[in-house]
Image (cartoon, rainbow, N blue to C red):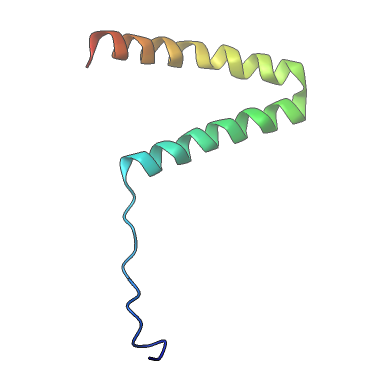
Length: 66
């Protein structure tokens, strides 16, 4: 049996919602880490302040189920 005859799937995995969500979460964490490294505690405070409306909106969405 050669490598060409091996039963290897050649199709690519499509981007699902879960993969996209993990990519976005990783981008947010990387942004927070780079702001903290670049600016120290003020950078971390600014990121936390910017996330307040986002978390508030997520809590409202989860509460009302829309």
